[in-house]
Image (cartoon, rainbow, N blue to C red; front, side, top):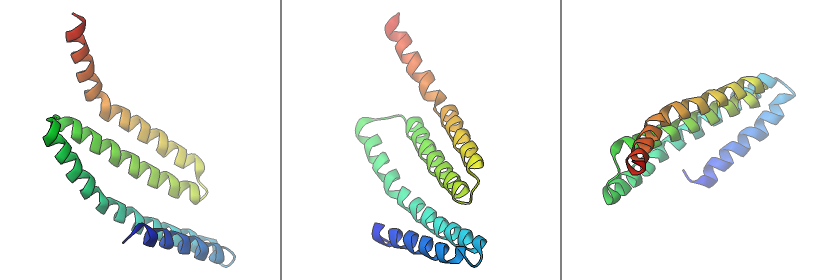
Length: 128
């Protein structure tokens, strides 16, 4: 699928959800959620391209695999939390969506701590 097809799926889902809102509002939420899941999994399939590119970059500049792993975890956390938060906010549960965003930010901070520790160790060598 192309970006245009994904945009059409999203727009048609929203237009149908607006029409369903007058009949049964919850059906519109289900429809939009279904479209979001389809788009989410299509987006996950695009991660293979990102992984291949990161592997190529890693082979060119000899980055430790741990850093690439951390980067991929951070991308995954961002993608999943944005998806879940957006669904919650669209369903009218903005406070829950906000909590998911906060949890995602804290998770990214926790995942990035080994990189920060390595950076501080490197700076410690130069300071002495």
